Image 1 (cartoon, rainbow, N blue to C red):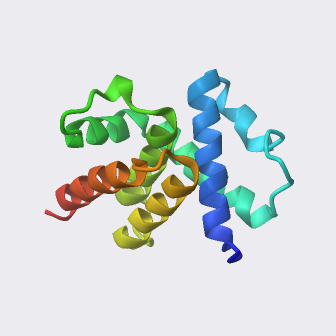
Image 2 (spheres, helix red, strand yellow; image 1 turned 60 degrees about the vertical axis):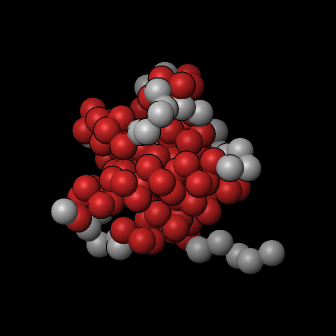
Amino acid sequence: MKSLGNRRKARILAFQGLYSWDITQCDPSDLFTFTWSREEPAEDIKVFASFVIKGTINNLTEIDSKIKGSLKKWDFGRLEKVNLAILRMSVYALLYQKDIPHGVTIDEAVEITKEYGTPDSYRFVNGVLDNIKKQIEE
């Protein structure tokens, strides 16, 4: 099996934190201890994951608005929580992490969705993110 890079590990950790936050409605500061993680992440992974989690939560209104505007025949409230967490952190990256190419963000989201989502979820996530990317690039 291929070894994951630190950025991918951090994105997975951020996704897991956002998923947990959405399910439990815990205080976001509880996420940054990473005590919920199976193993202690390296410091650079924790720093990047924390950055993504904080940025996503702090910009949630705009992020959710972008997602809602890109849904076709889907109700936002019925989205699978796994897909929603991946979409949220990815839209945050598309909007605010200018140093990361949009294609990289979408590819990472698709790969994480393939690992954690349902078998066809990655197609849905890819389509939504592609729509948002096109809006941003207009």
